[in-house]
Image (cartoon, rainbow, N blue to C red):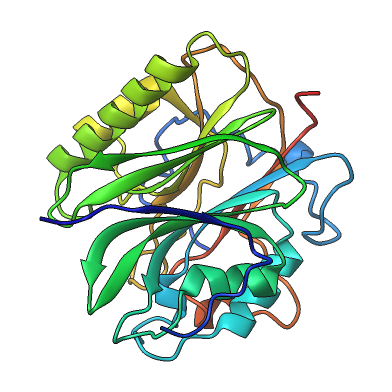
Length: 290
């Protein structure tokens, strides 16, 4: 039986070795970012003072497209420092496997100078494989949890509640719409059970492995969550780039946020085409909370 574990540590602790439009671009998901008035990135993708920056990034085991061996921790660390997110959901992380002998999230956290929490989804190659969250060390963690999700490869949702918001990171099943539909049902039910009476916003971020949002999963998603992210292809290692990476806001408790801007960022000296087979997505929100 697969064992699940949740590891919480700070980035200060060193862990040793051991864009074209997406396919659903014509689907009305509440996106409004084709309006030039919402573009705050005319001078680059640096942080706008006072904003809250959320992000998601499937790092493909920290290796380039079509490469599962040559991890570039320094390149990804530089990318995270330049993105400067307050919190970012990360998918496809090895932990001390025969493929990669390092705890990859710890390597990224050290280079990004951020804190982290990690969740194992499967045991693999004499180690573990899973998802994680990097977050600004100044943020106060109130509560953490994780829930098992179905999939031909078991999945998890990793929940971190901060003082002013809740952030759920996940990576849904890639093979079955039925499993993905169940994934979003379980995440939504969890949010309803824990945060219905809580006015702080609840965000869901990650690789949802869905780009045709007229499916059963897509309909379940749009019924309970509002997209805050880009409406462009995020998975690019294909002839037709697809949006499968999302940052979303739960509708269930009535919390609202105002999006200042969202983008797949670009930085001089960082080539995202050689860091993973996905692009990162950033979402900048106008101040909320205390």
